[in-house]
Image (cartoon, rainbow, N blue to C red; front, top):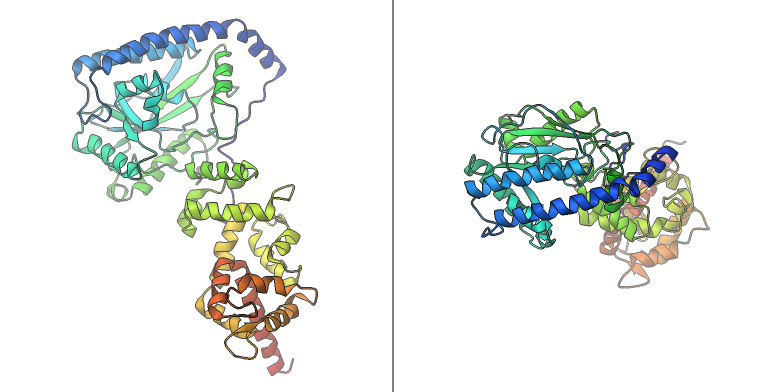
Length: 488
């Protein structure tokens, strides 16, 4: 049951406007929205100028926070940021709770992370704060200067040690130099969702083991023009629709500081999950094991001309319980796409499953198919395919079971399986119409006329679904022998 796919898909968002709402967008598009854009642009230019003053002489990656004079200028950036939000229609932002000082909670964890507006809303409330940003963002003209003024912790895609360095810098600021640096604002989900669940919290914010203040961010408008997901409206579409709203209502809820106990300090994943469950209770949302890696698999599925939802598998859960990493899952996704590509629903039914194995539909295959088809829908999706290979077929691939299966095929006990032996045994299982020669050719590598144990074992390892069928035949043979011996 723990492997059952949750109903919610956090990475899909659609906007369905009523006729009245469409009329509002049309009216605002030729009246207030253009005025807002001009006003935001002018305010942004002034904000950028202040940002240049704040960052004058400041180097990217400085190990010390800015001084008091720069900090005073930085406060004006917060005021200008709030003005930009007001111009965009965020007239009143409902703030619940109190943001504590850095000495009480060096880190703020904000969720759910759903919008391009999250960062601006988070930074305009309370004292100066820092954050975590991709190093590539500094190359964006105008935006890079403003990011530099926040002195964020940098994450680089090109540096293989970036994740470790990021964690070390978060620890340095929050533990070794506690009180000297401003609070670090972190979005532990690591990617945007549609706010219908809280996905897995990354452990980076929780590794230092220091108190954190959870912050719940809620957009309250009936029409959700904010959620920026992997499968949904573009950022420009969302921005324009947001500008076409009379008012954009937001609530920022500062929860009490979460003090980790000794076990949580030693186990960042436990710490992160407990904070997530606390925030989920406040929001009345479910928790799912989706993560940013699911987004990467969704993008990979799209590149393979499969529905993006194919890659939505709850990566964290499969990684934790099956030990499969992203590269392994990408490999399985390529396998699955080749099997299901020609199907209208991009999933495997019993006939496709049999065809992929080059065997006819028999009782043995139906039993195997049912083990894969966990929700009994009559179809195998990519998630079920991965789980089936790991929990159903792979356990059959042990040296003992494969050796027993090899002996069944090696009827003349010469240490090799000939094509005739293989076809005879498989035909006894799947019928005379079975094309065993095709599978035999897949197994053999050196001698086309016979298969060694090493080749047989390698094939069972690479195609564990066959191993399950081989073992099934061995078990069936043993059962027949037992019934014969007792006279039944």
